Amino acid sequence: MTPALLLAVSLLLVPQDPVVSREDPIAISEEMRLFVDEHIDSSLPEYERLAQLVRIVFQENRLDFSYEKTTKTARQTFEDRTGNCLSYTNMFISMARYLDLEAEFREVEIPPVWSLRGRLIVLSRHINVAVKIGAMSYVVDLFPEINPVQIGGQIVSDERGLAHFFNNRGAEYLANGQPERAEALYRAAFEIDPEASFVWVNMGVSLSHQRRFEESEECYLKALKIDGRNSVAMSNLADLYRKTGNQEKAEKWAKK
Image: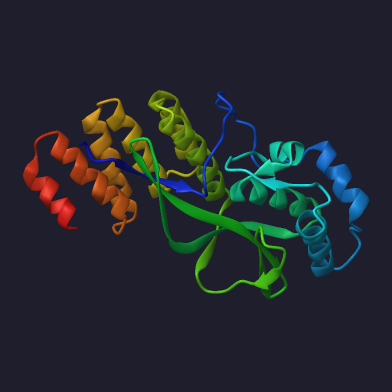
């Protein structure tokens, strides 16, 4: 049996819509503005604005949200009332910034979570929101509490957050056997953040599925140049070299 390729995905997967959209994932809609204006007093101190937003979105669930394993823009999440962790993060950042809060994407260190999607092994990652108020930063997650930022994650740029978004979109197409469409989304991610090693890994997977092995190898090596400890890239390189008959290199990367 051919070994499955490893795919690095942020959060628990991805979209169903068949169109590559360039809509800004964290753009706020007029309906979202009206919702925030109706429920939150923008003249309150920053922490109270944050607490009110958490309360209406998560604790009181005024929007009647339910969790769904899809990655959506802020607007789509608000309209559909469903989404995954990244979807909620997009929406919350959009609303928080409308309230003049300093809200940022935050990559979270979690134990590896693996799942099988056809011939792809998916490594799930996690992102939530960090809101800086004065000298403190607070974490906002799907859980209805506001906690100080602790060790185990890092605040990242909008570019990195949006790279995760397009990466997830591409992962859905790849899992559904559409590597060409996945490739288009990974290229969109590169335009935003060329240093996102996980996107280079997934681009390598999509190219390998198209039997473009030299290009695939270049992507895995690029991922390792960015992050020398990327075990997913190493594993995929070993698999690639096995496929192309280079047993010496395959053993080298399998050992690593």
